[in-house]
Length: 416
Image 1: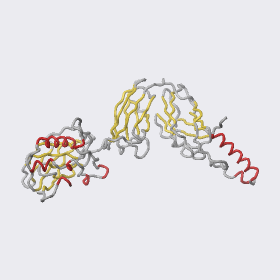
Image 2: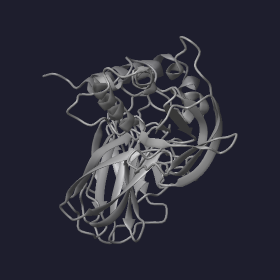
Image 3: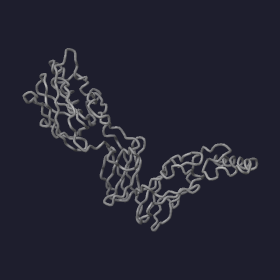
Image 4: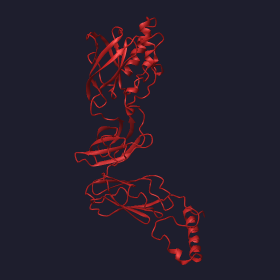
């Protein structure tokens, strides 16, 4: 009959220990007895701790419960990181966590509350005396009277700027109106799952927990969704997180793409769904305030479609038309130098790789493209951008002065 590896390792350690007691001086038998160090002698233990039992049983409903929840393992547990290994919901920043030999005992800092559903999450940092960590997290649920539900909420956290999943983000569900907070950690591809929550209304918050304090701070990129959960509901949620500004986007600089198109670069990312009109941007000659008629104002994603349509219509266009429409670099990010490092616009695919049968992705950009009615003459111009809406929904009105130069022979202003 095959033996369990832990049993064989234990036998080897026991034999080595007996040998040490018989051969080594008696004084050495007392060395280190006050420390939870790895046992000496025998082959090293490479097997992680195995959870044997949890008391009370998971999914129990226990009115009047007033004891510890006990997690028992098959070997001695190290004290290292034991206080930070347990995450307690409804959220308790400092639950009581005690270790006793092979078990971990947990209870809320101020005692159990009747008719609450409790979630206890044990991170895979719990380890044995040889440094072997448990292989996966432990999730435990029980109730102090409230009937347990069979609901579930799951989904993905996305980065609003890049459109990609956000790895290792967090999700909190704050019950309304009592503000009890439940939560979970998303995995490496931004996916999360949380079940057996009290039925009711929740404010769901997906966020990037930069300082690992397990709560959404003002500096964290985040997104919020209101959710209703019944006792047996299954709900899917997507979060698109971004840094929330406290002011609207202001005009940082203006760049001439060519004589008919100018690019406005702002201090923050714009809402790509916000409607635009010709009244939002005004251009005047600085010398005498002569207005420059504006034909159209476009988000970057709209400009791609506009350019493609004009290329089809103006295949035999004159020099000005070709200069405006031919350069692929109009869509490329040439505006990053005017922005802070954490507000750099994301890389965006050229228009020619987007199939004609689908809309381009509506990723935010910190830019607007302005198409003029007539070509600009060389000179200094003042540009007003009014009621431009940022990702946070805040508006701003600002202005900038810039100089339009006649491009030298062979110079391509669209590249810089």
